[in-house]
Length: 612
Image 1 (tube, helix red, strand yellow):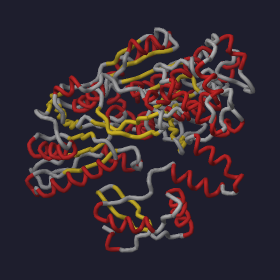
Image 2 (spheres, helix red, strand yellow):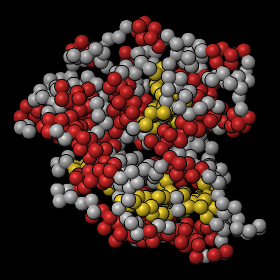
Image 3 (cartoon, one colour):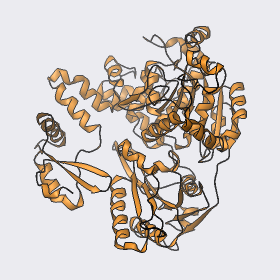
Image 4 (cartoon, one colour):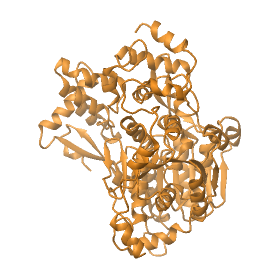
């Protein structure tokens, strides 16, 4: 695309117009983020739903659940006793008072304080907040949104999907009864495209704000504008580690509340010399802990699915070779693409001893950084931290986005160590030197917005009615070159015209939760009479890889994949796979169990000897 008009638009932009004056300039929108809204009409809409029969019954009888009108179960009372021991419970009254007196509240809670499960429930119970609208709680990860919502539904003694629900990409488990909804930050951003003022919600809780995902950073800027137009909306920003002064300054001096964690002392060990292979070092450390240390579960941090599955297999093999000298182990993987039922296994108890009086069993969780703050696993006493995680990196000059294994930050290392002190004094084994920790690690993780392709974000902001991207109130503004590349790509795809305004094609593209290139491909496919095929290819590209190449069956897996190969590339190979699956009521597949707990499909295999 010729850079002329866009360069002038981007670099020679007039000074930003003050927002109040710009509110009337939006084009072709019924309601926009910047429209002046009659406060009384918003309140009237939010107040249409009165107190339902269940709440009235609960007011008359305390043993009746106010949300569904049923008597409380014994399990509810048992969980309630545990909830009352959480650090955040001790500050419930203070939290509700501060929230009542302020529109925005910043809450810093140590890991294990109970903020993710309890704060949204406190908001629901507060007078004037419970019966008019929903409460939203955002999570940066799908796994966290699902598991936390299930836990909260259990704590409230209601059915998941009814009074408490969750919404993630491609799955909405909520209903018209839902009063508390956990959702990924990206899903809340998509809801804002249809409802710019987020009128469905009375309180929005942004959890895990310290992770500074791309969607969370955009939500910060959006919600600042929404709060100006909706005085009845409340915002709670929660985090485990937060640059409190920076957030307070961004949110115009919002009050800060600190909740202590329930942490026991954690002893930290460093290596004397740098480790040559952190994966081998982690496996060796697990085996040594299992042999020599007292009872307690182990949490190992690794970078990705392949590495985690490899480690699980090797740990099982090493422990099995020791025979009866040591107790049994249950090795559980945890990463985002794991099926929900498999993810729940991390909460299972450790296995019992093989024989009475024998060595105790131990649970070993091998996880990505999802277990850093998003999920809390009780019983962890030992943490092994190799010091790496996968991070998204974008090079705007060659327009390539990649996941690279990178050193973690000091804040992440602190979070990982804290996982060992949840239930009793613990130990953290850092597989790097103390000198590396002090000299090489950054204090905080760089926000994702500084290292991401912004094409989809720019398209979303344009759809939301934000035309002046240069002066949009980002907490950390992205590099001008990254923003320029995003504008160029969208102009080339026809989503923006030469003046930078959203086209009708761009409006359609913004409705798809896909990269702009893929959404353009979908939108124009009917012109070439191939929409069915393009839809299948887009779906195949939007899910994890359907092929697996287990070490014990690499040759057979390669042969199976070759049967679907196409001379014109991987896209048509994926289309062949999908068509083969659809054409066979019983697809020719074989199930290979590469590790206990993971079943993968290798297409086309027919040799039954490979089944285990």
